[in-house]
Amino acid sequence: MKSLCIKINNTSIIEYLLNKFSSLDLEHFYISSNSFKIYDNVIVHYSGDNLNLFFDYVCSILTDTVIKFYEPIKLKKDLNKDFFYFLPSEKNRILELCKEENSDTSEFFEDKYFSIYNAFSKYIHENHSLVLSGFFTFRLYDYHQKLDYILNTCINRYLIEREYFEFINILRLYINSNPPHTSNLNLIYLKDQSLLFDENNQNIDIKSSNSLHAKFLSDITFSDNDYVLNYLLNTLPSHLTLHLPFEGSLEDDFINTLKLIFENRVSICNNCNLCCIYKHINIDIN
Image 1 (cartoon, rainbow, N blue to C red):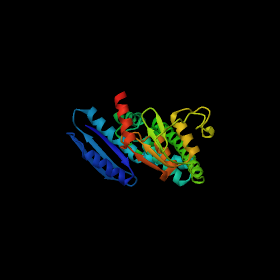
Image 2 (image 1 turned 120 degrees about the vertical axis):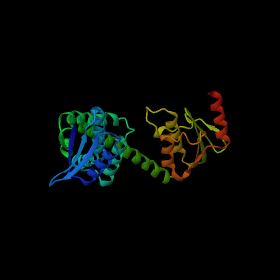
Image 3 (image 1 turned 90 degrees about the vertical axis):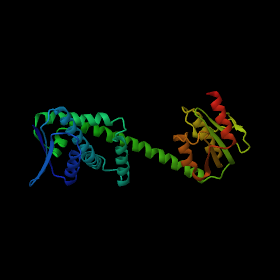
Image 4 (image 1 turned 30 degrees about the vertical axis):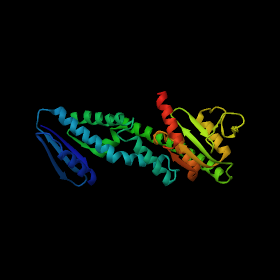
């Protein structure tokens, strides 16, 4: 028989472990629990022959427990300790980004998960009891390194995000403090190019010297989107219609940026005559 005593001092974790172990579909598997002065013990026993399956189940549950309960606490503690200068709202946003990075669909998850799993596997093969909080603190060094990396990555993401919204706010202020220089413009946004039309559906050559004032372009940005944004900021249309022929599937970062900058001046269209024309053109080309 193989037995493992898990020592815990958190009621929520105890309930979580008991529920998880109780739901296992494994013969010859038994659970018991006892309360003592410092710790509550959750004890699992296995008298069957498939020890590898038993170890896998136990390691998986313990790994999920660490990720669910201990990981958020460590991230928040490290954020408050090492990056105390962020505002509470900024810390909340950074923790939201950490949650995204730590989700089971992120690129970090598998590496992080097996770092914990392997540490548990090595330990419970050789020991019969563990203090879960102590194990997390002292035996998961590689995992802690990964969390440090994720936290720093998310802080950098937040700083980029903050700079982006500061940029948006500056442009929004500029737009709202100046009168429109033209009425309605139409942007046809396709998979690989952007086309701008005036209110009479005449194509605008946004790259020509007559229409382009480069004060909003850097000397190294030359994509269609850069030219479009530069032209719009120079002409300040009273209304901008964004034509997305593919039913909104192209609402990417650029389209979202235009919506943020021009706010209520923007409308989305995907089924007018212009949309239909360019939709069919694209189908014919492909």
